[in-house]
Image 1 (cartoon, rainbow, N blue to C red):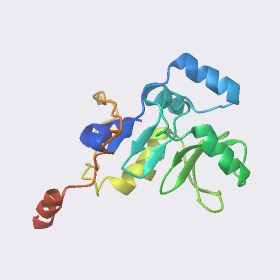
Image 2: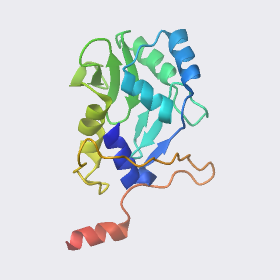
Image 3: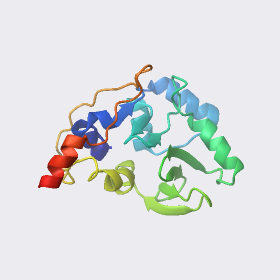
Amino acid sequence: MRTMLRDAAARPECFIFSGPVPQGELEAWMRAWGVEAPDDLVAFWESFGGAEVFETETLLSPLPRTELEDDLMAENQRLHQRGLPRDYLLFHVGATLSAVRQGAPPYVTLDHVSLMPTGQFATLDEWYRRVLHDEYAEWYGIADDHGRADEVVLPVRLRRPEATTGRQSCAPSKRACREQEKR
């Protein structure tokens, strides 16, 4: 989660977190649905709920709080009907699909059509770095060097989409693009 937090601190307009899920509510939800998830994904849900990232990527919230949020279990039920194995739990939709599964490594990316694994990752941070950060960091001007593993990460503000004006675009401004072209 460290890389995601650094990216969010660098470009906060590109990250809209839905808000923390209280531990007791999350545990009750996991028991009710029979969900097992890696500790780092549970920690993400407890701290941030779900997220809209880089305009096109959604980290699904286990307990959506508004109609704007995608429902993790509704998405899973839809894909299970299409053939996603029952031991896979979809947690991300966007340019690719991502799920956790029992066994190692627990994080996988999935083909949109066949739902077959296309990549494997040991941690949430590794998944984020190799799937989302590697895809979007250069475009959004986020530095690739994330420093030492023991660096302190500043807290990230929670942002909610504006109901009347929509989300602020996190695409580079025309001015920033022109300045980049001059270099």
